Length: 187
Image (cartoon, rainbow, N blue to C red; front, top):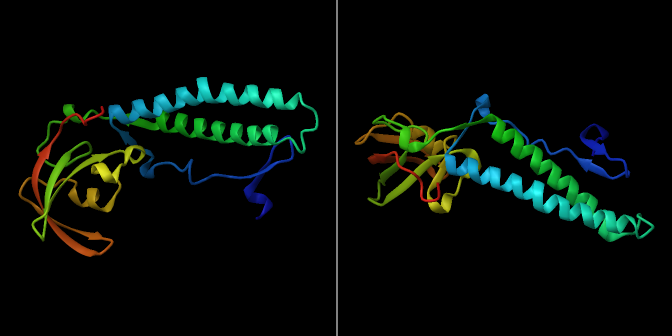
């Protein structure tokens, strides 16, 4: 690995820069629902007030045991502290850039961020998708990012519209059956 893409800390540990985790959201906008923002805040609080202090105590105890070069608790603890600090910076940046949009306050009759959309595929199967922020995607629960190909294709569609989009399996057509702006289950 090129020296340009590494960082060395005070203990001589080399760590690769994590640019993908701190990459900004395209367009600099980080739309998020109130529930998604609260989940990020809760994770940040847990890291800051529970996990980091616990790992810091372990590192301090391990440092007092003498030789740090072969001290597994010390080495692992330092590595874990760097991971926690990196995640805390990431969460803080995401929350700072967040534009919280409550789906229940959206008053339009076409698809926008926060919409819960019922669609019908060519094979007559129906699915429900909620368009959420990139930090709250849960495909298994039907929550897709507003940046995903399907969500982009759905944007501005109205009930009854037939849209086409490029799915991994090829071009697909689907009909928009219903558009709702409601609170998500865990918001």
